[in-house]
Amino acid sequence: MAKEHIVVRSLRSYRPILTRRRTLVQPVSILCTLMGILLTGCAAYAQPSCPITQPVWARPPEDAAIPDPPAYGYYFLNEDRSIWASAWWEEQDRNYLHVTEEGIKVGWFRPAGAELVITGRRLDADAPPLEANASCCYPTRFQASSLYFPTEGCWEITANVADSKLSFIVWVEP
Image (cartoon, rainbow, N blue to C red; front, side, top):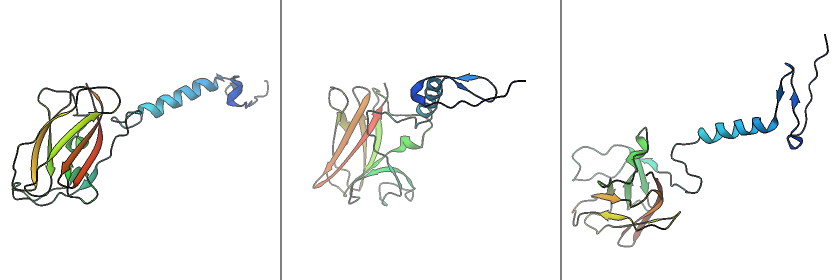
């Protein structure tokens, strides 16, 4: 019986590798397989061209408009925590941010009674601006809204309240 040999070559040579089992393996196929595993194993929402903002796990402020005590959840927060935006979709099994005629419901916390102005723009392509409906004059910190994304893609959402600002980036599916 012939002796078994292990031949190791650099990946740049693209020559077969002889293993102990005498099977041939192409370094390129190994690299392709590893890349496939890495790419499919990434987070479902990750888009390489979209720097998605990661929400934080936090407990929102108490508010008279919400009968139950506040519970922890995912939120986007500005630096001084004066503006909060719910990222409820982070707790779901699939991405709920889709282009839809019904819009995406987002709850906000901002200084009580202050006007909330929400805008949005697509970062990865030309598109009409985001449409946001936030009813006027909520007297408490809580403010409900609907966001209407005209196209899929990478979107930056900005909320302004008096001198405070919150911006975050999300990926919207078709």
